[in-house]
Image (cartoon, rainbow, N blue to C red; front, side, top):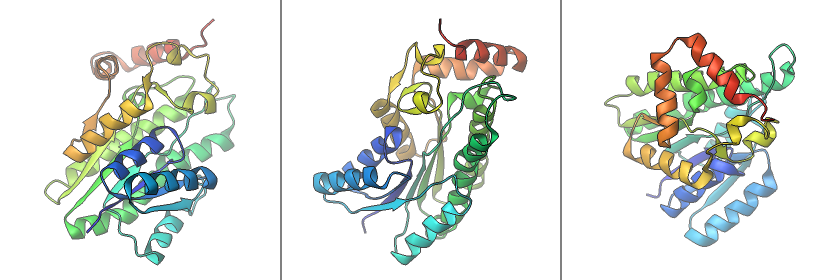
Length: 259
């Protein structure tokens, strides 16, 4: 029986690349994002190129009931999810006392709540079937505090901790959980977060197809954690050996505006 993957944030960037990888492996795909037209275009391309079925669910994950509504749609369409890729997420830039909390609340809904709820709702069927794979997209931001992006960094720390925790719980069930922690990547993230001029995106930036392939390969292999790129791996794991205050200072410097 042909397997099906669900990808959030599938209208562009890493999400689109994940969808292409799944379709190339002859998996049916469920594409979730706000932009319905972009999803329909991608769905048509994938169906034509790979002979799979691509289902579009246009949904704003910042809305409180989004995850439950997605799962209800799956039930109505009799779609079983074998692979869940929680990719949707965004950031915001600026000192916390100056930033817009309404936007940060939306970020919490997308980066944390929707990811957690989709996993909660789809995981039991995977465990019952003794088969399934989950990929949660975090960031190298998960490894240290992030001045000027404090809420975003905190959401990604949650994703990493949550992923590692349930991965351990699921040992021996046939279901695996992988956490992808990419560094700066060429997507719309920097533009959305209003940080195109940040030093973070002026240095070595990986491309989305490469990052997605690293994450997808780790997912298929059942690995718990993947940090693409040697520099990203060194930076991420080096934080374990320095005081947290020093890691925060470095993050603030790196994220400062490039003059």
